[in-house]
Length: 168
Image (cartoon, rainbow, N blue to C red; front, side, top):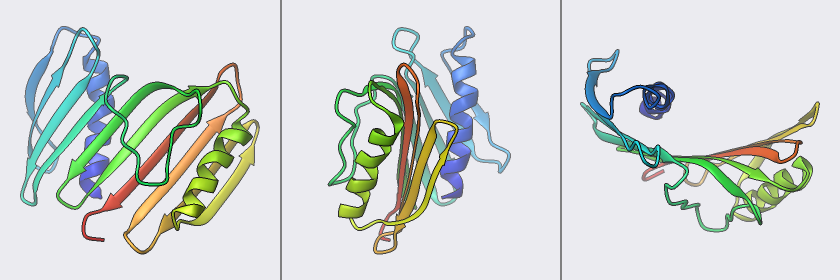
């Protein structure tokens, strides 16, 4: 999932570029891979493609990017999507959704913990500190991993990251 990390790190850089005048471009990664990006000035959506020796990796990020969660998972009821980032690569795929909800962090995390357990995830981490709750785990059957974080506030802010290996 190394390329996912490269793309997600690149997404942050592209978000900053969205504040400038560039709406598309090409660059070479530290590993010598060719990459292209585009930024839609109207919607803020960012997309990127990286060509490497193992194949092509793509990323789309923005509030309007369609959400597609694995079977058994749903967004927390009433959630407002702040941004959705979807990464597809030869070795797997990942989704990172940042959202807001009008519910306590405890309820938000419980929603995803219950879904994860029902979907066969082994919960390996549960944390509660200073109004932030987190749960994480993996499903060994297919190499999927899950991390959910929610912080109490008005509104509660949260993030869910789900990644899987292809053919895992």
